[in-house]
Length: 359
Image 1: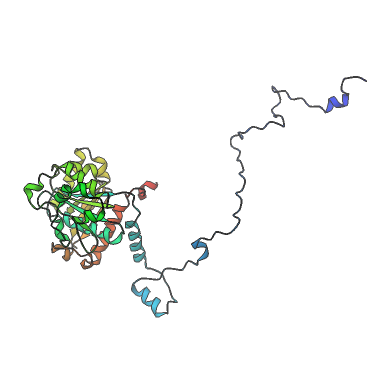
Image 2 (image 1 turned 60 degrees about the vertical axis):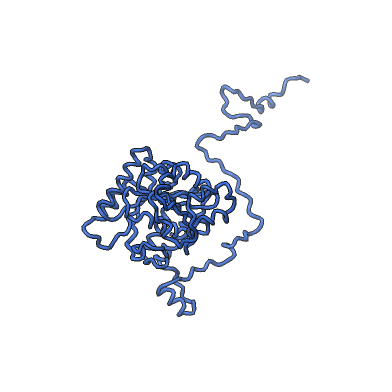
């Protein structure tokens, strides 16, 4: 018998020439699929049992209205007719949720203006009180005014201690109860650390002193507001600007108030703080309805081009008194404006993104 394969076998056998044959051998597979051809992925294995989450097990009922004629109808119908919250109430609740955003670490807010008498201390106290009344964590306001600041007069005085006493005893402060003996607390839970009442002593408050003060407060408070003096060249101001997470520039609704606030931004731009100016918030304070000949919209437009946000706080008779501040005595419009201001500040909290960052 011949060793050569039969002609029939040769006709059925197929040889592959790498130079001419584009088909790979059956036992070889290219791990990289050809470009442009979608690769089907295997479907994930179905869950062996239904998810037992709250959303899947409970019926999602519409939240009953909290006020207004909708609530009257809801109660009069025996709670059968539920139209839900009004758009105004929904907006208010969204603002509260924004103010109450989770916060990692300590967030530092500096409030400043070149001009006195524009309500910088008042905004510091009311904004701090708004945060403290809504959030569950601790909020403190520091009076860094070198000219006998009045921040401590906005809350009931509980202690004669000042920031100087805090710095003197800083080495012995280990617990919140220790630092609490140096602050006064208002009804909103806002705490205030007073400045030295003697201008000659407070003038020596240096950048290092402010840094040491923050080192203590950051261990026990989530929000620290600093009521700065009107002098941007004050010795502590360099540390205030270096430590601040956001700047709030205060202006009145007058021509000279707006010019002074704009000059504050000019000074910051000229001294290397351009990024802080872009992220700053301008507050036009004590705006009266039909406020004379000042075109308030043009004032808003000016600061809108320079700052991240602009907010107006209306005139309020309770704030004009200059005494201790109670949020309950504020007009509804003023209270709502402060909540909106707090919500804008909270947009910049670490770990959260501003709406403009989404595009």
